[in-house]
Length: 420
Image (tube, rainbow, N blue to C red; front, side, top):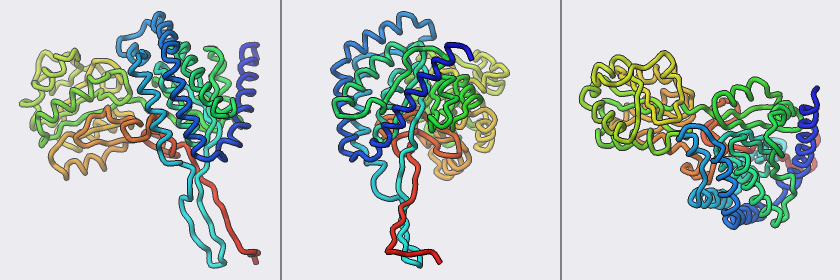
């Protein structure tokens, strides 16, 4: 074992020990105290906005990625306010640890209650978007979990400034320092230490590009709740309202092209494609979108560039849209099953039966009817924020908010019963 690896494991082990000590008090805290701490953290974000923007400027100065990826990294006053408001919205949510999930009485008189329980120590590995660290910290505090954050090197200064502001508020509210921690540097050995921290970290959540998620799933010795790649589809059905389709598609693709909820592929019903597709292409081109189209789409709009072998398997995260003409709902669902990432799919149609078939037929975490895929977001779902969009079938699917970071255990109440 080299020196860097050994040092990273020592740092991680100490952080995990502090986190483990913190969760013993976090779950026992009344909800009002957890909520008060979140409001204090939000207040400190606003107070330290100037420092956070200065740190973000340092990250932006050294960033050399695409405009869409730069947008993911960018902070401004409005975005800092949105982060703070999201934390306050999390504080306003019902307590995910309150009450019981179920209760029943056995014939022998024992009362059995299933009660919510925090998962424990969460390891959050994320890229690019500095708000993710704030969202993760707030969601973990709300649900009684401790969290260890490791953001991407491209957003290191932004992440650290946000962390320092939030933890100042948490400290003022009397929270233990181990509740929220952050990697002390951008050494990749710390990620490896997190992935190998079986018995120290209870759950790893990666949020970032496909390569990050695949690495975590491949190397982790800790359970993983994987964030999905956003290879999302919008399907324009034969009975779609044309003006709605134009409006929704333009938003789904071009509102923010670098987020995981953006539509990456347009599927359009062959019955309406000759009349409708040229309008859709014209709208999107006027917004700066470029295209990769199959032969059937190019037969209708000849100037469209031809799609390459991997284009329908690509999460563009940019102003590029893959386009395919399909025969019907079944063909659309087949295309999604072959090329999608199980994140978010949408159908635009006025036919309720067609919508029901589509919603039931896709296996993705979120399926939408007559709405932009960019609504796949924890804030828009009423969670205040999200840690990511999970597609795994074991624990949870869709946006991950406070309630999704809990499990359950049992309380058994008797009157002196003994087992025969």
